[in-house]
Image (cartoon, rainbow, N blue to C red; front, side, top):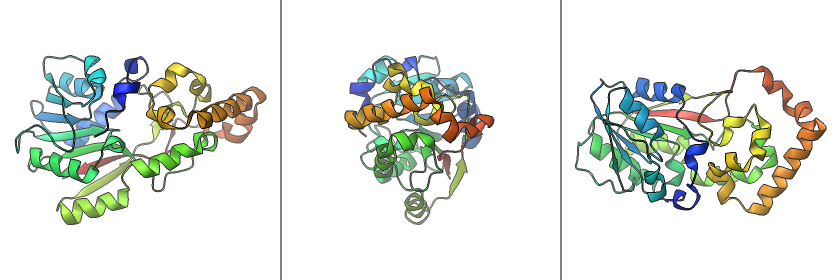
Length: 259
């Protein structure tokens, strides 16, 4: 797992917060009784670790970045560990379930990470929030930053490849559920601002999103200038304004449930 947030994670909590709709979906898909011991792999600052702890679960948050752990949420039912998804520092069958939220694209070996997750959970559920970079629905932001999708295709595991690996090599079942983004999403990851295009012009907003940091900055600046010009001229509304009539938008985020 690549601890990229050691370099870009300062101030992460300014824009990234737990959204209750994500927390509730995680809890629903885990389908475990309160008191169960959960492992949150790639926990970041523990936004969702803390929410599940508040719901009554015993949660261990695993995060390789010291910068992120230093900003980590605290709760009596939440403990923190340093480590990598590909080599979990836990014994076999240590947990009742595992969750991962938007972290698989940072793994150096997602297959090994899944093997490890299964090792420490025995037959418990593994719930993942990820992104379908293989065949995502069209999204206007990519018109301004086309390399974002190119990067995602390189970094995120293909769902078709995951399905084969999980079902044939790991002998587990995989369920995939789309997660359309509400317009008032509180967790400001890349596509969360789909109905508020002006928010991408804010450096503080962009600072919590890895896509803006790993992309060639000349490309980022070019896209920002184009977006700002289109917002000023009304071109953005002409081209994309119809989406403002919707309350949620499917841009390719998915929940994966492995049993």
